[in-house]
Amino acid sequence: MTRPDEFVALADFEPAARAAMDPAAFDYYAGGAGSEMTLAENQRAFDRIVLRPRMLVGATSVDLSTTVLNERLAWPVGLAPTAFNSLGHADGELGAARAAGPRGTLMCCSTIASYPLEDIAAVATGPLWFQLYVYRDREVTRDLVRRAEAAGYRGLVLTVDTPRLGRRERDVRNHFALPAHVRIRNLERYATAGATGWSGESSFTEYVHRFLDPSLTWESVEWVRSISRLPVLVKGILTAEDGALAYSHGASGVVVSNHGGRQLDGAIATIDALPEIVDAAAGRGPVLLDGGIRRGTDVLKALALGAAAVFIGRPYLWGLAAGGEHGVGRVLDLLRAELDLTMALAGCPSVASVTRALVRSQRSML
Image (cartoon, rainbow, N blue to C red; front, side, top):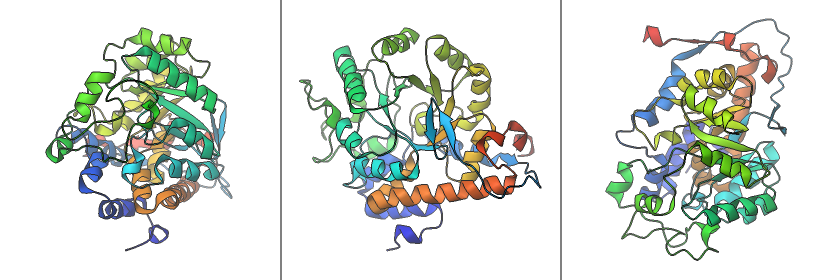
């Protein structure tokens, strides 16, 4: 079997992950909602954007560093919050955190992680944000926030696109259930029956509908802000209207996301939604993006359209499944090298030099 060190692009990791994983677990990572139109569109939309490179800019070296919410990053790519990393490899979230830190980037840890948030923080050498679901039991939510603060997390990423779970047909066909060794470890300390996972007799859909609060409103953003001293970013924004509302209700930033195509099938691709949300933000805070990032050119296109940074999800999960911590590191190294080369060839010697003039949409030509 080919080792991660021999892979030359992020696309090489997915077949390796498929070979290494239980088929139902692989489908849980890989799948989207419904016909998976949005899942596919997240990547296709990048192909409709072309670069307009500039020449003779003196790009002897490229400065990839940037700052997001006062966090200095070596480059503008982070690890998105993804559930149950231990489905791919025993290293799980611990391996991902160990890989991210030395490479100068941040990791956003999921509420639904397979290691406790404190254990992840203990091995991390880079900045961590905590992705937050609001549970029906608000005291559980409040305590998760307290724990994240105490463990040294530097931001809260409130996910708002899950009043119900999208219908993920691969999981339905596979009767997907968590294996015995993978649980929602962050919830083990709370005396709530069934909150740490689900069995073959139930489903993730039932779990979400039983425990997560579907009644959230914009005032819920204000509530989360009121219980924490950390900056709060709102994740799941796809329209200018909601971007503006997020900032008006106290968000420090937003994450343009369609949940990796796993919620509303037919929703707009994140890169297509990005420009109007950046315009609506009007400089009030950073706009970040996840969904469909597979190449350094994708990162550059997102930066050109106004993203302060991007997150990758599935690519690092494939790296984790293929080679644990080392596999995640290899994914990040390849993507960083691609971004460095892409920016040099595009005539962008720094992140600050990237503007919308660098890109043009080819939608009308397709």
